[in-house]
Every structure is written in structure tokens, then in C-alpha cells.
Image (cartoon, rainbow, N blue to C red; front, side, top):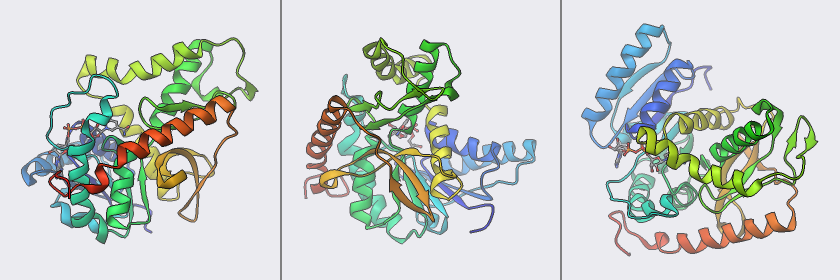
Length: 308
Ligand SMILES: NC(=O)c1ccc[n+]([C@@H]2O[C@H](COP(=O)([O-])OP(=O)(O)OC[C@H]3O[C@@H](n4cnc5c(N)ncnc54)[C@H](O)[C@@H]3O)[C@@H](O)[C@H]2O)c1
């Protein structure tokens, strides 16, 4: 691969815009291809990014294209969202499963099946959508952005509580990117030592669950946090993440996809499951059961969201 990969972003909405902006400012890629529901939307974002490129002197060259032209990219980010009204008040991300499932199924056939590069799914519910994309397209290198953002938020909240810099906290959130997330507290460390006891872990979990809602309440959408998680994931899938772990959505037991700590060697992912306490293992089992049940109806949808 060249030093400056070509990256495709599908979906020019709030998250797609933040990802594309971060790619230009970070000088991460050479070509940046943008596709969205309409070519006008993609062209508008590409123009805005081009202004940014010139003002910053960034080497990244944004260009609008049709979704079928994204196949040549070294990595493709899927940040599209179907049009639907989310009626879920709890477990909000699951509210998009059927509508986004139909979109993902169509993309799997029309775009991803011919794409040689890695594919990173952001669309929620991300664990289900990554699995659906992989199983429908047959593509080997599909990853969901998974619980990496939850992990960053967990470390931030813990650091704030303990009054230490966040980079002194090491630990993972695994399982669902959603209500069935598993906080791996047993193996979490602060400056290399186990977590001090007692800790208000229930409060930290509640704050973690509330955080995206609070961001949405204030600014409408979560966008820059997810964009950071996507750039970190792109570094790893493109072989630039070193030996660090990142919590991406990949298959675990019974074909269920969920967030797992992963390292990459020669572009191949390897799961590095931390030691779990009995309670954490039980929570992971619950996440597997929840995601397995939620996937069943999606496995039988046609591209317009009707049962096959
Ligand atoms: N996994 C995570 O950590 C995480 C975090 C935040 C958001 N998300 C998810 O990311 C997705 C995007 O969020 P958003 O806030 O940007 O939504 P948005 O509604 O602002 O944007 C969605 C974009 O998708 C485009 N689109 C729709 N159908 C398309 C198609 N067939 N082909 C190409 N583009 C299409 C729309 O035109 C729109 O520009 C949502 O599913 C959201 O839940 C995930």
C-alpha cells in the first residue's frame, strides 16, 4: 500500500462529515472519496472539505462519487443511516435494526462484495450491522467500530473519578455497543495497579450509558467522538496501530459479532480476550444471547426491509 491510502466514506451525515473532516485535518489519506444518498449531498461535502484542504494545506484530496465507485479504496467507512423514525426510548440503537439492516444488505451486494480493502461499519446497531454486512457480502475484512468508543468513555469517566490523567487507565469495554456492554473492571489498571476499592462502578456504568444521550441533548448528534474512534480503527486495520489493542466488533461465539479487544499482525485480526470474572463472563453471555436473538429477523430481510 502507498503511504497515503485512499479512504471512502459512505454517508455524508453528521458522523460522515466529522470523519471526513478529521481525515483531512489529520492528513491521514491521499484520496478521500465521499458517497451519500444523493450525489449532490456528496458533492457539497466534498466542496466544503476542499475548502478545508486548501486553508490547511492538507495533502488529502476529497472527491464526490457514486457508492459503486468506492470499491477501489484501501478502506471503506460505512456511516449511512436509513430514513426512519426511532421510537425506542430505551436501547435506542436497536431502534434502527430493521431500516438500517435493509440498507446494509443492499450495500453488501452493490458495493462491498467487490471491495478489496477493509470495511469499517459505524451504522447502528453496529454489532448487528457489521455481522449482516460480512455475512451478506462474504467479505473477510469487515469490522464494526464496536466498543472502542465505549472504552474511551469508560477510561475518561474512571480517570475523572480517580483524579488521574485518562492515559493512566488501561482497561476495556467489550460486548454490545449498547446497553449490554461489559466493563472489564477486573483487569482494569490505574498506573499499572488494580482499581482501588471501593469504586462506585454502578454510577460509572450509568454515566457511560447516559453520555451519548447527554451529547445528543446538547448538540443534536454524537459525531466527533465516533469520528475519533473511526480514525483509530482505520489506523489499526491499515496496519498502523502498532501492538495496541482496539475494541472492534468481530465474530465471537455462535457467529455472534460484538466488541472484542483486537490486535493486528500483517493485517490479520487476533482477539485478545481479557481474563473475566464470573460476573463479567455472565454479562458477556447475556450480550451474546441478546445479539443472537436480535439478529434472527435481520437474517431474513430483503433489501427493502421486508421478510424474505
Ligand atoms: N457505532 C458508533 O459508535 C456510532 C456513533 C454515532 C453514530 N453512529 C451511527 O452512525 C450512523 C450515521 O449517523 P449520522 O448521525 O451521521 O446520521 P445522519 O442521518 O446525519 O446521516 C446519515 C447519512 O446517510 C446517508 N444515506 C442514507 N442512505 C444512504 C445510502 N443508501 N447510501 C449512501 N448514503 C446514504 C444520508 O443521506 C445521510 O447523509 C447512524 O446509524 C448512527 O446511529 C454510530
